[in-house]
Length: 511
Picture 1 (cartoon, helix red, strand yellow):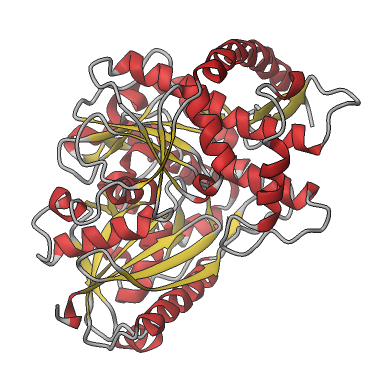
Picture 2 (cartoon, rainbow, N blue to C red; picture 1 turned 30 degrees about the vertical axis):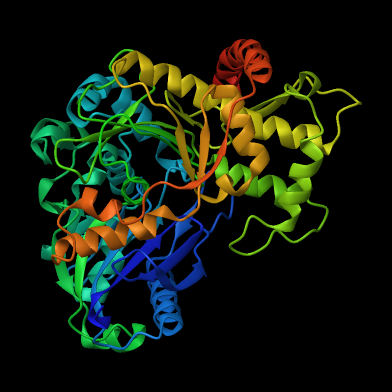
């Protein structure tokens, strides 16, 4: 195989930027990683500096290229995925006018609540989702930072900003790929365009919005400056790629209807691939992501920051132990070992995992809480309750998915992301949901998904399904224990009865 057939995938994630170099058989030849945690100076604020994000991306790519031993003429194409629910402004020369913020930054809460209350049904009907994040964030920036807003020529995603720098784009070249549309609150998703109705409702000028492209479109080429800085070489085609979750779905082979996946990452997601556009207008628990596969969608139940909460627990209750950089870490392995000795239900202890607000359905005032603890509960009880809470939320999500898509019953769960490295957590999810849980061998499916998109864009693969067949689903399978599943069904009812009044309590709480 020619060395000119190498493919590069880059994940601009909420906690780290990861790059991997693959050959066309899916073999990983090199990888690089840099930290990308947000600045959180006070509760409700979480900002990313665009230029720091760019520097980390360049360093990550350079490390991966060096590890792969790739030359400047070896890479056929590069594609990016990244954080979904955020936006930042750029001026005419592609300089950042605002930080990049995600839903962890809740300063736009008033704008979100206002638009959801007045236009929630239209947003969900047209976009397929009630997570109108980008539109309200633009409205918040206009109100809170009028000078910065006035300097802004276009609003872009995190990957859009990084790609624009690498390719030397101007504001008139700003783009967003179609897999992001569900989170904008501004799109007519079925027709793959901006909705005049929703833009007017948000007070957003369409002229400031990026053009909508397909995930496999080539949006630019690496400039000489960044070709040298990254080791890629100048002229490498840059493919639009996809939102981080959508890229992961491609990597996990969700290219046909009826496949269920658990994204065990910073924002845990239970996702079902479907060929039906059925917005959840009644219960508002399910969000529809456009798939990179034309005519398909990923129906998703999302938890805001669940993986971040897992990381937070280790930081705050780890007794000074090291978490491990880029790995599941010895601390969490020890926590898992202790928590595995606990019985299901943690001796009556329950946890609300919504430290950053609930998103399915949207309740921005929701907070985290442990309920039912006594003097007999130990650290391992609190930790296991956290793990179980994510599984309980997924059970509620699976119930909602079955209600909307009754004909597409999955036979297993494909799990990937950092949390899928935990055997205990995987078994808990299998027991709670009553389905076999396959922890896929490759935890970082998104970067392989990027490589697949890049390969399709330049003709190395015929289509996404053909590419997936090169690396089919594999990994250890955790099968549900019938007795544990029965007990968890009872505990799930208690969990629901606990969280409903908590929502009302937090609505009245003034901090």
